[in-house]
Length: 223
Image 1 (spheres, rainbow, N blue to C red):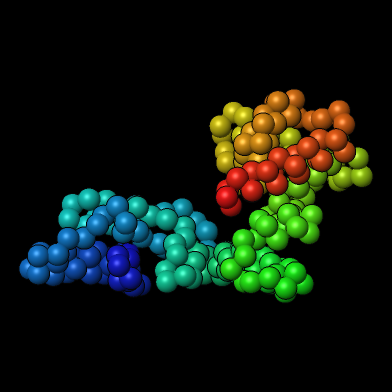
Image 2: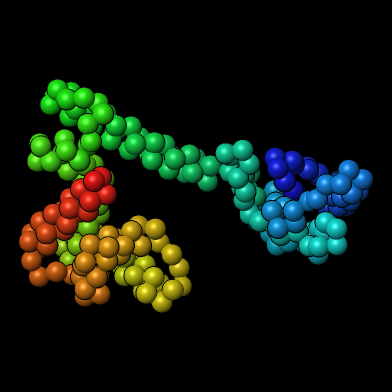
């Protein structure tokens, strides 16, 4: 159980319940409230079903049993492995690297034009005929999406996986961040029909038009 960075560890279900009762009494005596909704139980073991005696309550309310939780930035998994932690940290590092890459890129452009660091980035990109990395990233996403739709030179497993993800998203069965981003990029830039039809007749013309709309949107945001 954790609450405001408080953790209770026990080797037996009975002892953990006793610890919960002690915590409840302490909170009562000191006019403190424990948030049951934010308090979780994780059982560290390799597989197996939850036993009948592996249930815990706090102030008469059942506590939710989870397979993993994030404690001070570290994701603990019920099987004792840290693969999920590594994946989470890698995703955070990837976001940080992209942010640094964008800053370095914009500082370099500012240096080449010999303008003040306070100059709007939109003006710099417009002067050089370039576009920010965030637009480049969106274009790459859409190009890969179109490649998946065509299925040429792609592994059958990838094409099949996309088909399953699309069906799940369409039926509201599951949520995929990447596919949802693709959908948002298209709809926010007036290409909702492309998402509905799942393809374009002229890819080159479509990419050029999408790029121009992304640039125009960025200029509106900056100004």
